[in-house]
Image (tube, rainbow, N blue to C red; front, side):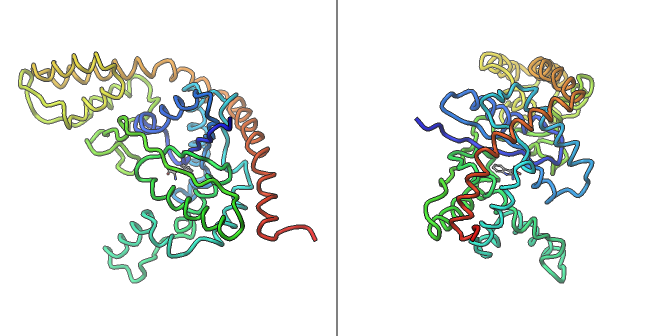
Length: 335
Ligand code: TRP
């Protein structure tokens, strides 16, 4: 039986936070244990350049993201774990795909439209002000990531579904012109606690600056949890778990039985201070063993690099011959 290719990437611009973990990394590691699946998990470092022009941050983030996957127990004997920039075929494919992608399709991409809308709001003379070709073509690079390895399933957050649909469109267009080369990928969206709330109650996200870093040292983790916004109900007053940031975070880490108990405590008017204590203990216990491995890995970048090189070798064993086939298909060949 042919194994299903499951592929996802993380852009290397920041430090992984609890929202990334619950929404993306934890389910991806779980999925990687399925013997019928070949997982392709990669550091999207060329994607990082779209949003971030601080070299040191891109490099540091690559280290942290890679250490995170390994600390959480990604089995790299089965998974293909690599850095996008170590697979130059992806950028070559990016160009081939660009040449079959309608500009109009890119005009409809959310990230680009949001940037234009912002310029319109600021009444900028040029609505494309500050928008790079990198941002504009971002969905094509993402399509190249996905199509290079003929991924069947792409686990992503809701905000990325449009990009997977664009990758399908682009693949279908290429196939129509040059023959059946690409699998049409499908998005798979994690619905189980997919959006975790952050410190201020909005979705936990780098762009809202409300995140709790996944491997924050214990003391800092405690401090951050104490900062989570609650309403002003007093101890003893009945509290509603629905829509409560503390409760939603708790649900992402506790067992159903534990959640049922805490739900009851809400009805009895648990104090916010006590709930924060319970939440801290639960998250900390869950994370502590991986955090220890993470800290050790950060001290051993050579080990991480060796893992990435092994992954790059496995990836290129597929991408290099595939790209040769694609080059021939479009008429780029030795005479
Ligand atoms: N753009 C994705 C994000 O910001 C990251 C990403 C890059 C990705 N390439 C990908 C995800 C390919 C899935 C497949 O979350």
